[in-house]
Length: 360
Ligand code: CP
Ligand code: NVA
Image (cartoon, rainbow, N blue to C red; front, side, top):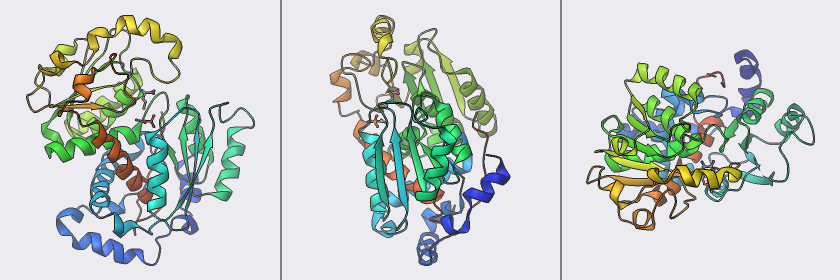
């Protein structure tokens, strides 16, 4: 959808107008000067298909607002009252499904889940027809798909916000929760280095883009042939030029982890790659995060994983169960960042800045 069409549909006053009680909420946020200095409620974008839709201002707004929502959930209890969210998932989920449902309900809205594992979302009818039905019934669409373009196309056609709950290319909500976790642990994200070790997959892509938006540092070590997507790397480097982020792509896990503040890994075979699992199990063992590899990171380093973990493959029990592990903090923060995204996209704040980036 072009910017003008997006504005015509996605900023319809009836759908996104601030509710009458929200000035009080916004004045609460503004009165809490230390936290509200940067007024995150002024940010708005039509969709979160990619981290690129949020950009620097949006990533900052989501992290800032998520922190406030986490500490004062009761202040947001009814802010999305009457709003309806529908979720279509082509792949399994524990965390994403439940944190979106719980988050929407805790903001006063309602959530509907459609198990779409039996066939792609566009198998029964044209995706644009699905979109034009949904926009008549609900306020926001959350999609977990194989093909990233399914989510891009839904955002093009639907006149209501669309949120990426994981595609083969990106997992934006995950990386936002991960960086909120790092911010809680270390404070200024510009001063830390995250080492991602394993497959150059959707999670790695979203960590790269989020790191770039935040001006932080990341080293990604993958086996040759499993490097991150070149278009994602190009976009990451372009953003990094603006923010000063340090992006290093490597093949050696030891170089990546050396002195790092956080060590992150993910499945060697993602959902949809099950047929490659045997072959990947031969290639990836040098990238296993075990206690030996963790000793090469900083002594204060944390271990991170988006979950589900394949214990004994990409991570050993002694690492994921160690005091260094923050995997359940990451899982908890999914709830808070997704509440912030829903609030911002559905016009929970008093002002919105219409903006839309291309979904590459
Ligand atoms: N991390 C994550 O997205 O978990 P689920 O697949 O359980 O949603
Ligand atoms: N890379 C993993 C992430 C799961 C949350 C997958 O896509 O299966």
